[in-house]
Amino acid sequence: MVAMSTTIITITRQALLARKEVWMTLVTLLLLAAALIGIGLYGALSQQSFVMLMMGLELMLNGVMLAAVAFWALSGAGAPEGQLLTIIVMAVMAIEMAMGFALVVAVYRGKQADMTEALSELKQ
Amino acid sequence: MNHGILVDIAFLLLAVLAVVSGWRVFRTDSMVRASFFLLLSFIAVGAIMLLLAAEYLGVAMFFMMGVEMMVMALFMVMFMMNPAGLNPMVMVHQHRISMGAGVTAFLVLGLMALLTRFPNRPLPAGLEPVASLGHEMLGGSMLIFESAAVVLLATMIGVVVLSSHRGRYGAANEGSLPPGLAPGGDPAGKPKEDQDGGHEHHHHHHH
Image 1 (spheres, one colour):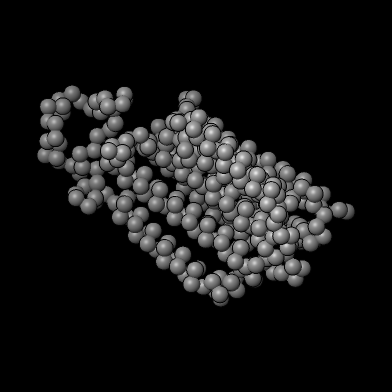
Image 2: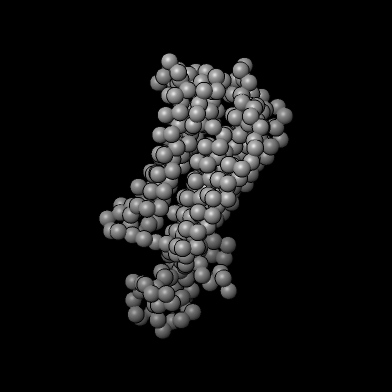
């Protein structure tokens, strides 16, 4: 397993350094990230269940992390801050999940519901 | 052997997998299955990170998202009315606006990616991605890294406070009623005899 992934990584790095890819470019990577962010935004806005809403947010952060790594690898000359930014986004993701689940528990205790509509009185 | 073609094929497959499974998250009846679709999307993106030589981040993505999505699936089973997807289910609101916002976000971000000229500066030949990340985290950016740790600690405390049985003014589920089956209707599954009480519910004993 380790040997296999090492081989894959070695092959990829050789290919990256040789710049032979036609498809895996910064533009296609950013388009993929934009698609993930778009789908995530749709989910975060359209879902009624809190946990599904959080899944939308996670998908958006997925796209953000991909874009950060793509910039780091193809446009940032491997500056270590690019990787650090991705780590920070991962930490934000963990915080969002933990606080989101705690809020779901708190809302469920108070309202016995897990839907955003149950909190409509907050609008007043 | 031209390895570039292999990398390209892998990238295209993973990109399709990431987008399709990301879309299927919101198009499945089972919420547990939705969390596994999301996991699939994360794993595809993690593998693309490996292709981009971000070895540590790609592998960290696998581990972190594996655990996170298992927690999510457990939550689905605990709280959701239909975690197994035995009934068809659509739980959406403001569907058209959301669809429009998602498509607009994709188009605007995609146009920016297509129209902007980004500098072409690939990874230098001798770069060790993991070592350079470690030196950065425990060197120049140590303050940022440590701040993240403090924020995580604050999150842990906040999560315990929020999800505790004991609320700030007594039991957290005091006076809690299930929502009505229709908007503004009587609480679902509640016996009729309790309706004379009005706001007197706090006289009942709660465990």
